[in-house]
Length: 84
Image (cartoon, rainbow, N blue to C red; front, side):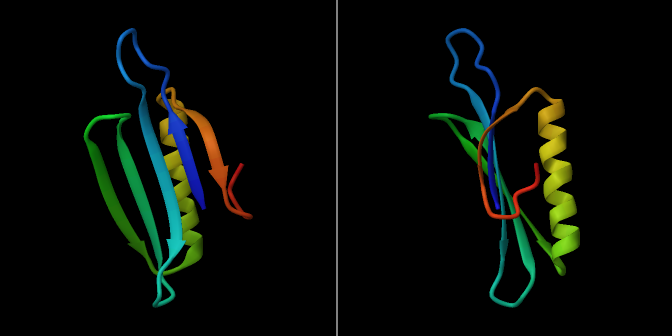
């Protein structure tokens, strides 16, 4: 699953964004990647490991909801089972 969220830019600034990627690793676990930054600027990448899909999806949805609460808008969603 992949989700791209973006915040409305302030005057004269590039928009801030958050990208959430949830993927299964080669050993059957799950990885949640959180990429945050400003378009054209520095980027920060955080990685979380999960043993099962249920806890990984719960963390994905919690991260998504937190960003939407902060004013980010969903710009792109990918994945057959992407949460709505």
